[in-house]
Length: 178
Image 1 (cartoon, rainbow, N blue to C red):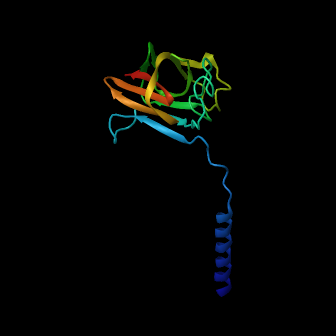
Image 2 (image 1 turned 90 degrees about the vertical axis):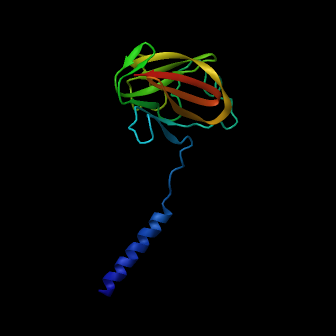
Image 3 (image 1 turned 90 degrees about the horizontal axis):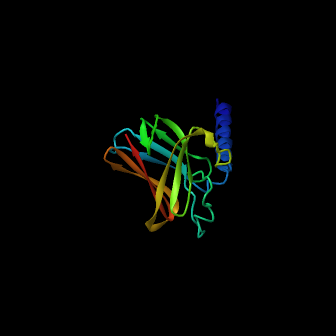
C-alpha cells in the first residue's frame, strides 16, 4: 500500500511539473472579441459579431496599414463573422438569419460594408465577390477620440440597431433594421 501511495505521489508530482513547464504559443496579438446587439442585458442577442482587435501601435491606420479601395477582413486574423438571429434589412437587401463573413472596403469618405456567405477564411485572401449576400455604402465619420484597438459596438434604435465600427480616428455606422 505504501508503494502504491508513493507511486501515485510521484506520478502527481511529475504531472504538476510537466503542466508548469508547458510552453504556450505566443499570445494572440489581436485578441478576439464579441459584440452583441440585444434589447437588454438578459435578452437573447439579435446580432453577434466575432472579430479580432488589431492595435494602432503608433501606425497610420486607414490609407496605409489598411489601404483604401481594397477588401479588408474588418479586423485581424480570421475574417470577421456576423451572426443574424433573425432576418434583417441592410440597405435595400433583406438578409436571411444566419452566419456571414463581414468584409469592408474602406475609403476616405465612405466604406462599402459587405456580408458574404463564405465562412472560416483567414483574412480576405480568399474573398469571393460572387458570394456577397448584401452590400451597403456608409459615410465615414471622425470619432470624438482616437481608438487604440479596432472596436465594434451596437446602439439600439427604432426597428433595429446601428453597428459602429471604429479604429484610430475613423468611425462608420451601419444600420440594421427588422
